[in-house]
Length: 433
Ligand SMILES: Cc1cc2nc3c(=O)[nH]c(=O)nc-3n(C[C@H](O)[C@H](O)[C@H](O)COP(=O)(O)OP(=O)(O)OC[C@H]3O[C@@H](n4cnc5c(N)ncnc54)[C@H](O)[C@@H]3O)c2cc1C
Image (cartoon, rainbow, N blue to C red):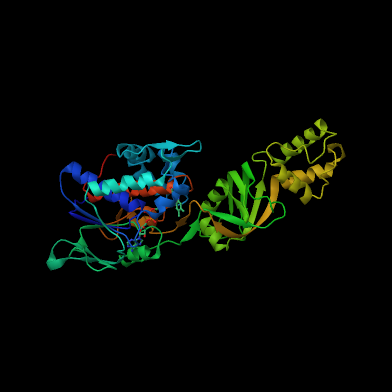
């Protein structure tokens, strides 16, 4: 555990800002002075925070059971357990409350600032940066990090920035790399001996062209069961079948919605390897099995003999979808229920519980997109977020091979790993806030 006089934070995003502020707060608590600088490649910091959650910033998720929380990370769930025991979603809520920002939960668990604006989070961070005299260097990409030991003195990190040396000073006792998912950041990590795991997009929609859903964009299903089958055995695990359940949305180009995004996250690497092709089997009736759906349709028939098929249908389905389903099964929608044959009921039932749709590509979700892959987790000590390869070097946020599903889990990874790194860089490594 080290107590550093100068800290360089590379990347002015969620993880970099949060960690820099937490380190400064700790220094203040302990009564010592520390020089903290943030280096940001572009002219604008906190870009993703600003656009996140559709401009509302889904800061975290209302789940205060660490084990349950960590189940929402397709990569990193095991490694995050220990850091989350020290700084979890409830600590995030408390931290922001102490900083004057109230977070409120929505019915699905997502938590936003009560102003419903990401600017509230940005203002909060800027106030704290100013309060703690943290120096912000924008338009200042870090191009190289070297470990130096001038005149045999204590080891330091020398940074080379796109803008050249600033303030006559370009060394630091500790460096936090929080560059998100950009190639330049991975190169910095590699230059200091780290390996980068296979990168792949996560959280995307599926491109599907099928008559059943064509022209039905905007229709949503509260509960569908999904089974994704990829061609052949793909990935290191050879896993080619993935399942999910939950809301699904029909879009212009195919299917999206929470259940599809979750599926894309869990199958991110395997889908990349199969070039985003595969078969999606959907049960549009959620948990109901084939027998249950058949009996539901038969009951509907007996109770509505004189009604037209186009007017009476299962209440969990949107009408336009039902009409498309009749079309797909070549059943005349102007028929009465009395006229529908056993074979036709079975046919409807088959499509309802096991529609087979071909996936031909992926489309990135507009509200949240992350990348899986990054600095290999085995090379990081998750008690400190320090590199096991290069002492004094720390990592936080999306640069790690950690990614969560949608709902505030990706920001929580940034807060937690940033907080843990700050504790260790400031020589304090126990307890929570
Ligand atoms: C559109 C969108 C919406 C999202 N919405 C949500 C949401 O509501 N909730 C949620 O939990 N997650 C959300 N996410 C994911 C979340 O934004 C990221 O997981 C999170 O921002 C990662 O934080 P980070 O600090 O690790 O990386 P980033 O936020 O990407 O920040 C990295 C910073 O480092 C800078 N940088 C890179 N290389 C260098 C270099 N060499 N030198 C100096 N600076 C460098 C970059 O310019 C950038 O500013 C969303 C993502 C997107 C794209």
